[in-house]
Image (cartoon, rainbow, N blue to C red; front, side, top):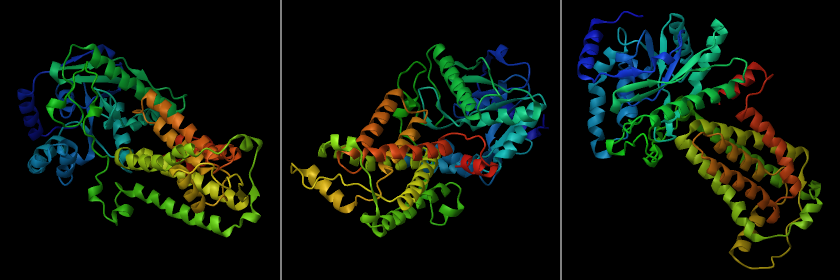
Length: 485
């Protein structure tokens, strides 16, 4: 253990004097060997309870910004108080500077036994320090809540901390154990659950999901098994919005905060500020529309291969399917905007998926230009849908149709939503149904042949494997680039 400064010892003694004593229950679940304890943050209650009362030698993961004087005010305000009412936020901005000397004394040199956590290239130092502390015989405590709420107990976990187990196993040959922990300030208790062990022989992504799901469900089960009490949420929100541990009202009813504060965005920041570099991916649309214009206008229809199958003659034109066909545009815009605000990781994956299928489709359109002759010469009925359909026909030529990007995009959007832990089972069914209906609609409005739908499947598979799955046998540099997305 590192040497603690006299200043920190005084601060710790003062906090312990005023902070209510906490009972740590379930210590029999702690393995004999060093382990990683994973719990709910409870704002400052989680770290304080563990620093003061957790048994044995231990280190706590702490945001790296809270260990340096220059970065403490900005991080403290953003993470602790930016959810406060607008009219009083100025007071908390002042408070963020007032607490800086105290925070520096607590988390800086000579302070608490913390491991600075970073989310950039310095993350390697976080892993290295963590494994060093484990090898010294100390337990490591992590509070990985972030992003969106999943129920009335927890916000979603940033599950990348589980990759520690893989590195730990490679270096030591030992299987890391993760212990779930529920912090209940209202009961003045900390509860430890049964540990889960990392399996080095299982696929890395699957193991990360398994362990993360186990930890989140175990913490939730522990909380709901206790006497009724108020849950202290990860976000610093009004106490009137704190739910009970037995409440059916999730945190999701509260106002959500965007994952990135785009108010601080500058044109230069898109290329230099890591918070906003994901916006560069939107440039893929500029490239795609340029290529779309070229393939649509430079390849004459007489040089295109006609796409047709027997099913196309069975399916009759029905303008009512235009509703689902146009829902595709809304789905794309809504999904990208939502992910930009609340799930940047999903935005990166989805936009990269789009770029891959766009590139593959354009290659096919150039190598094997296609056209369909399925559009009706006239409409049997005259209504707003047929009028809109006529406009689309004039705007969108019948060339460059195989494979269908309508289908490929829909599958990608659906996959991005299904991969999110917050998506409920009912919503997953609705999203899958919407994907199918949009794909089918392309044939009823005679924008695509049935052949185009099936031709889109290989594009979906390639993009899905590269973006949403881990591929064995890929060159190391390519795999690393994919994992950075």
